[in-house]
Length: 186
Image 1 (cartoon, rainbow, N blue to C red):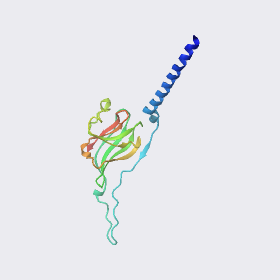
Image 2 (spheres, rainbow, N blue to C red):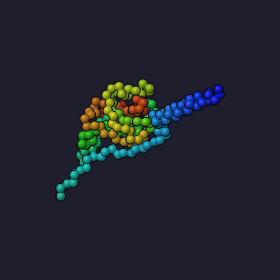
Image 3 (cartoon, rainbow, N blue to C red):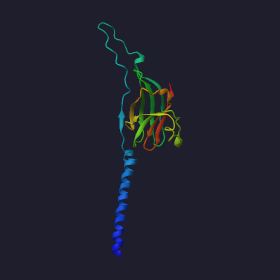
Image 4 (spheres, rainbow, N blue to C red):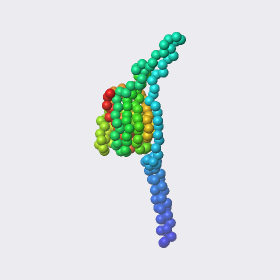
């Protein structure tokens, strides 16, 4: 009788251990907890002014005009949501008419599937602001390049940046904002 119980118990133990191993593996894949201790610093310069063309022989050289310099249209300070986040955000029009969202001195936690979103949602402090950015219009500008530093994100040519009022560091996997900034027009 004891032998029968032992034989029947072994498959249950093996099945339970297999389920635990699979569960831990899926949990590690989904949450990626090691990213909380891994920092990735990115230091990009703001795209520069249009390079002046060489003057014709004998012609005086001209200094770049203000129109050939990037112009900040809006900006704001990042506030913390799900994770402590600091730094600033700028919406910049480049001399060629294109736009970039620039994150400066960003400092946030790393995480799975972080994105930079240009949104029309208001920035709210505390837990009330964690989940508002996917409620209205938003444009994903791409994966967060690094959780620290200064970096640029191109705004697609078919997007009117004046329709958007905030930027969020958005965790697409868990539908939560790590931090966000209201874009105040300058």
